[in-house]
Amino acid sequence: MNLTQLLEENIKTYGEYPLLYDRDKHYTNIEVKEQAMKIAAGLKALGLAAGDRVIVCMPNCPEVLFCYQGITRAGAIIVPVMFTLHSREIHFIAANCGAKAVITSSLVRNKIEEGMIGLKESPILISIDEMENDKILNLFKLMNKSHQTTLMECEPNEEETAVILYTSGTTGQPKGVRQTHKNLYSNALSSYKHSESERGTTLGILPLAHAYGLTLSNIAFIAGSSIVIFAKFDTKGIFEAIEKYKVRSFSAVPAMIHALLGSPDSENYNLSSFQYIGSGSAPLPISVIHAFQQKFKADIHEGYGLSEASAIVTAQRKGMEYKPGSVGIPIPGVELKIIAANGAELPVGHVGEVVVRGDNVTPGYYNNREESEKAIKDGWLHTGDLGKIDEDGYLFIVDRQKDLIIRGGFNIYPRDLEEILNHHKGVSEAAIIGLPDEKMGEQVVACVVKNSESELTEQELIAYCQEHLAKNKTPTKIVFLDALPRNGVGKILKNHLRSSLSGKQSVPNEM
Image 1 (cartoon, rainbow, N blue to C red):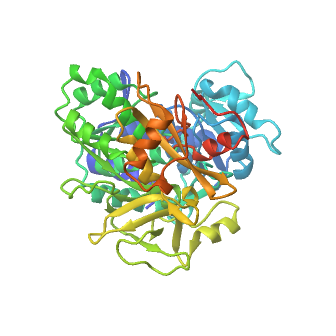
Image 2: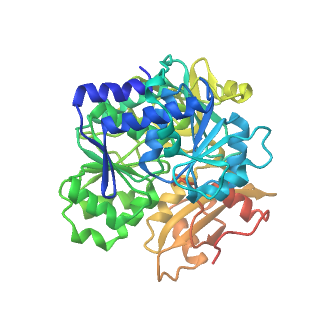
Image 3: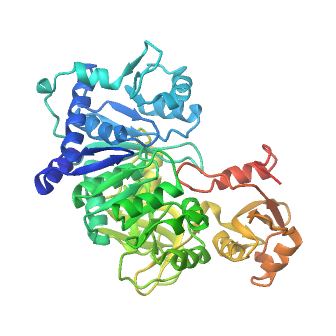
């Protein structure tokens, strides 16, 4: 099944209903299809052909999801790009994929125009709102000029590339992950079955112009659910929406969960429908999970995934035994195992690299055969993450392989130390990195955000760590920051911290 058929099946199965809520407006599933048909016709009228790449880069709004369906119906390939990226990153993506068009908004205009400078071929620029620029087309004028009746919709094969999703580039230059129609459909269907999703309304608070937006909309099509779109993260608005739409669950990243937990606004709303929140992109401290459960009487379901797996690999679900630190079990149709450096499968409880196989795994990176062959071997995706599987099949992510610290010949897993630091009442967040050391190979450095009004000192925190871990595993240095650097989906940018503290640039927000 391809992505256009998901919406068609949604309409056949559930009839017309409000699919998207955007402030005081709503759009039914049939209206979403109509908008998508007009967009597809408009793109075809501009000369876009099957296989052409179209960037979608804008803050959260219904048009993101209209465009996904429209681009697919035109036979083109979706390239979601988070609007928070720097113009240099946008330039790299546009050049790498050979974008034929960019659909954006006035809020991102300057970045987009800067990002297009120096490209061999300038993409067609299309905006969802009015811009004082004759070179930028208006999406809705384009849609109104096009004749839907002349559109011959493409029916892409499920093995064809539907999306090119660029990795965050936290460990180097971004790579374009090819996701086929089969990858995305199978992942959405398996996730729906695994979570035993009930029809209802969820919240779209994470970036829609990313893997999340595709997963969210595809699962909503299958489940017959509705989505409340948030243009920006707003704790009060989230609580209002939970009460108004009787929301049972939605997805967030750790920074958002921290904010919800600390917000006093929750006391003013009826949140009795709220059952659980899905968390991904980065591990949550166990102390935060317990505090959230106590405050909201709702669970946190941690999961694990990556762009190369389209994007969900493991997840928790209702009724499962809760195991602190676990990211759940594989969703249906996904296999995983833990391997040693020589490729041998490791037994239960042993730490090694997590490798994944299934219909959700990418066929490779766009125009990057070398990296594709490194990542996918004999059908198995090598994730670069270190983890272990227990006797019940639960996966525990220990750390990123590239974040592993080797000090004096001994392996140190940053997450172990981060858990200890996050339990300290004076610590809001912590990230552990390794920096080069002539004598020991690497030294352990803790980057810490203190709770407000905390007067913690470096010596106090080092002593606290030594009470819980062997001395060789504790930090030799504590750096206090106002905030930890993150990308648009909440991942802590440890490469930025390493670069900053290695003297290559100034430390951001250092106190």
